[in-house]
Figure: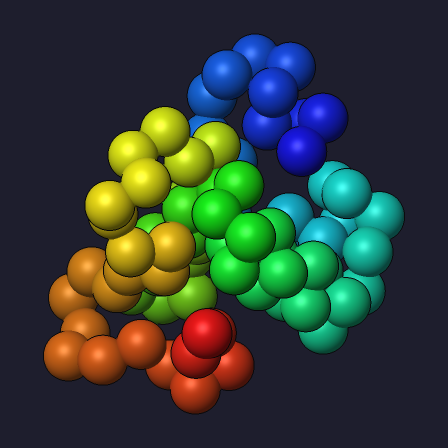
Length: 79
């Protein structure tokens, strides 16, 4: 949350790249992001080729996890 709040800019990248930036293994980062999304603090946009965009949630009625370019949310991100 501190990283997102610092610049008020979304984080974008693959789970691996974001994990290296935040010094977390990908599975641990995914679990943390899911918890923050479940709590309504962040929104996650899943894009093609494994890219994610993560931002502070400002719109409570928007689903916490959305997918672009796919028909459904991958099972690893199901809330």
